[in-house]
Image 1 (tube, rainbow, N blue to C red):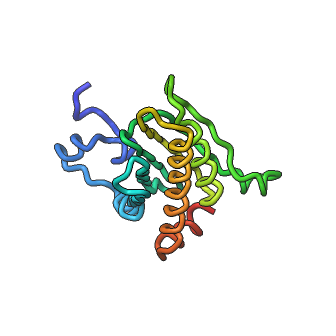
Image 2 (image 1 turned 90 degrees about the horizontal axis):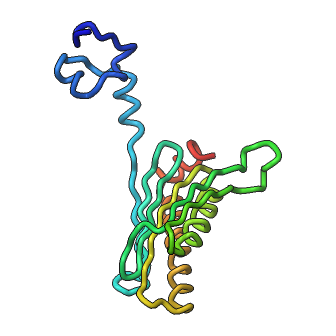
Image 3 (image 1 turned 45 degrees about the vertical axis):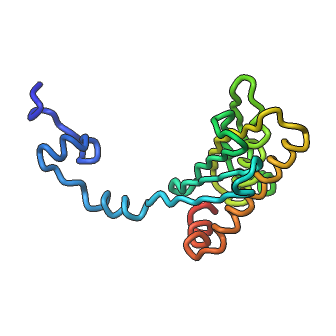
Length: 177
């Protein structure tokens, strides 16, 4: 079938290249919705310029958030978690969130992502994906504890920053509850 013979149910299913080539406009509702669905980004750094530095970046994805936590001497992806809010489900009013975790072989970043996903999903009452990788060469127990506390501080600071802005407060109330 030739390209001219292809039929699409609407302009949303056509590729960007096809729309440009054949001058197919996006529906007005889609362009208005796209403008309203901006993916706001948030950035927090704790203990900057030290081996205990933790950097958190969060992207607002509709009603949910995707969070990356890296730090120590070298960031990487060591574990990922999905925190699912359950506070609105019948019979689970006070439950908070459930968390599923995947951890790379030989990594111990699962503690960070599990805590962050549960805390953030519970506080924001939405779904949260968290990816983390924190590395300090030959870390002692004290080093690990300090990094974990800094991760918690970064998450709390992200929540505080989000709630301190009118935009964040409106989104948290309107979209995540």
